[in-house]
Length: 153
Image (cartoon, rainbow, N blue to C red; front, side):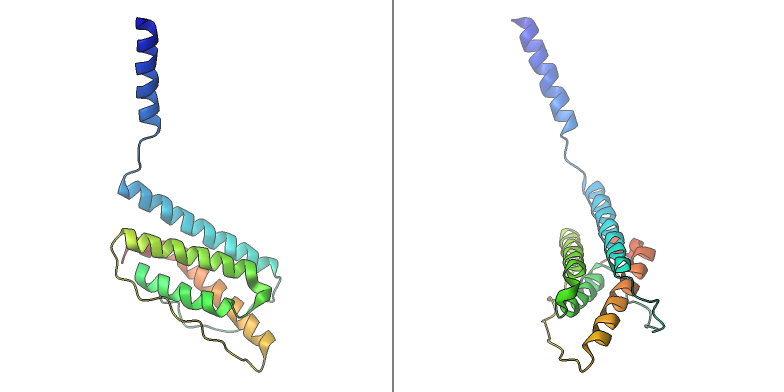
């Protein structure tokens, strides 16, 4: 009987150690790693579209902190919703925005409300699609270069 109780105690102690909760710092680090992974996967999805390299220059992406990144991803998500052809990229950006928003809330950062969807009836839908994809690609590349900003509000 003592052997069974001893084994049960050892088992419970081992189970407790293997299922310990992450600290807040570890959780933030894991979330930032997940955000970077989603951004990289999205860039792969964009490259699979086999678009020509963009000669279009965009102003530098505004990557200041979580509040700003969440808002910008929300704007890009809204733009992508106008193009059913880009559903996978839109899903990726939406997931990315949700993770950034969740991280911001866990760090008690102030957040702007999600931007409202505005339908844009472009005269040149193909050009608009190309511009949207290029803008998303540029923003995600900048986000990966500045992923340290994901630790700031």
